[in-house]
Image 1: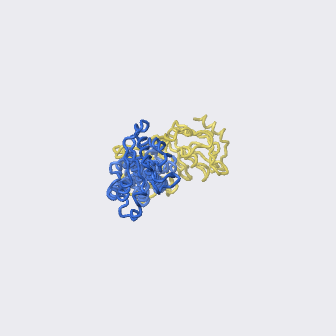
Image 2: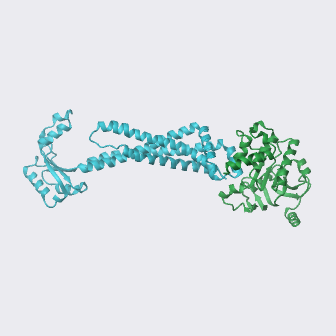
Image 3: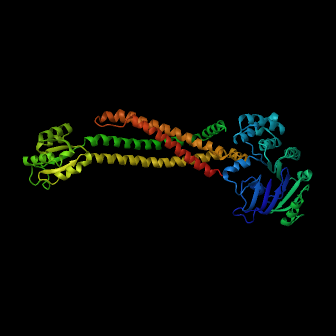
Amino acid sequence: MIRIDNVTKQYRGAARPALNNVTLEIEKGDFVFLVGASGSGKSSLMRLILREDVPSSGVVFVLGENLKRIPGRRIPYFRRKMGMVFQDFRLLPNKTVAQNVAFSLEVIGKSRAFIQTAVPDVLDMVGLGHKANNLPSELSGGEQQRVALARAIVNKPAILLADEPTGNLDPATSEDIMKLIERINAQGTTVVMATHDRGIVDRLKKRVVVLSDGQIISDERGAGYRSSETTVVGSKSYFDEIEGDQ
Amino acid sequence: MHLGFVFREVGQGLRRNVSMVISIVLVTLVSLTFVGTALLLQFQITQMKNYWYDRAQVAVYLCTDTSPSAACPQGEASADVKTVVEQKLNSPLLKPYISKYYFEDHKQAYANFEEQFKGNSVAKYVTPAQLNETFWIKLKNPNQSPVITQSFSGIAGVEEVRDQRSYLDQIFSILNVASLAAISVAALMLLSATLLISTTIRLSALSRRRELSIMRLVGASNFYIQLPFILEGVVAATIGSVLASAAVLGIVQFFVQGYLAAALPFTSFVGLNQALIIVPILVGAGVLLSALASGAAIRRYLKI
C-alpha cells in the first residue's frame, strides 16, 4: 500500500536532511502513528506520501504508483484516492459545512446527483448531519475537525493521512475524533497519523513509528509512545526483522 | 464536469478583482483600437492604390522660357519638339503600351491651374507661359511607366518626364508610417495588457489560495484548477476587444464616412464593410492573447 525505500529528503539550504535513509512499509488497513519531536521528519514523510514533494534519493510507492515517476497530469487522480486532515482543519470559512464537503467533490467533477447523496451520508457518519448549513466559524474545534474528516473521506479514499488532527483539541474532543478515525480505519481505510499526543498513542495500542532527526528509531506494533532516548536501533537491521515478521 | 462550478468561480473572481478587471478592459480596448486603426490604414492604402494607380498618368513636360536652363538650354519648346514627341508616341515601339494620350497647351494648363488654386493668391502671379505644355499619357499597364520615362528623358525640348504615381507613393509612405506608428503603440499597449493580465490572475489566485490548496489536496485536475483563472482573463479581454471593435466601427462610421468623406469628396475611403472584417480579428486577438497570458501566469503560479 505504502512502501518507502531508503528515502532521503534534503531541503535546499538545510544543514542536515529532513529524512535520512528511511525505509518503511505500511499494509492495507494498517493504522500507523508517526511520532517524534518537531522537526523529526513526520511532516516531510507525509508530504512525500501525498506527492507534494519528491525524495532526494530513494523511492516512494503508494497505491502501486512510483511517485518519483508519476507524470504530473496523473498526480490529481492519484490524490483522489487519498484523504488528508490537518491540525488547523483548513475549511473554507465562507462556505457552509455541506458546501465545504461538496466543494471537494465538485472540483473533481463528481455529478450533482452523487454529491447530493454522498454529502448528507458522510455528514451523518461524522455526526454533523444537523449542522450541514452552519458556517465553520459557528462550530467548535472538534466539529470543524469532523467536517475536515468528512471532506477527507467523502470520496472513499484508500489512505487517510492525518497530520496532528488532535493538536488543537482538548482531550475529550480528541477522544471523539480518534473514535471517528478508528471507525474510518475499521471500514478498511489505511490510516497514517502524525501526533504528539502521548495519551492517544498509549491508549490505542496501534503500530508506532518513532522518528528522530530524520531517521526511524523504532517501529513496533501495539507499542506506547516512547521518547527518542529510550530506543535507538540501527534502522536497517531492525527493519529486516520487522519485514521477516510480516 | 460542472460548468456551473467553473462559471461561479469566474464570476467570483471577476467581482473580487473589479478594479483590475476594469483596467484590463481599458488597456485591451485602447491597444486593440490601435491595432484596428492600423489595419484600417492598410485597407485605406490598398483601396487608394487600386483607385489611383488606375488613373495615374505619365506626364511629359515640355520646356518653357522659365524652365531651368540645365534641362532646357533652348528655352520654350518649338513646334518641332511636339511633332517629335507625338511621332514617338505613335511609333510601333511605344504604341502597344499606351492606352491613350492627349496634349495640354499653355491655355488649358492655365485653366486647370486656376481651377485647382481657386481663391489662392498664387494664381495671380502665374502666367500661362510659365506653365508647361504637357503630353498626358495613360498607359495600358501603369507599371510600365519606365518605358515612357526612358524614351523621352533627355530629348531636347523636354523638361521632365514624371510618373504621377511617384506623388501617390509619397502619400502612401506617409500613411504607411502612420500605420506603423499605430502598430508600435499597439504593441506596447498589448505588452502592458499581457503583464496586467498576469498580475491580475496572480492576485486572483492569491485571494483564492485556500480554495486552491484544497483543490490540489483533494485531487482536482489542472484543468479544473486553471480554467476559472484563464476564463477570468479571457472574459475581461473579450469585453475590451468587443469595445475596441465598437470603437473601430465608430471611427469608420462617424469620422471616416461622416466627416472625411464629406470633406474630401473625390477620395474613396474605407467603409463599414472593411471595418467588419477587422472585428473578428480584434476579438480573436484579444481572446488568444489573454488566454495565453493568463494560462502562462497561472501555470507559473500553481505547481501541482
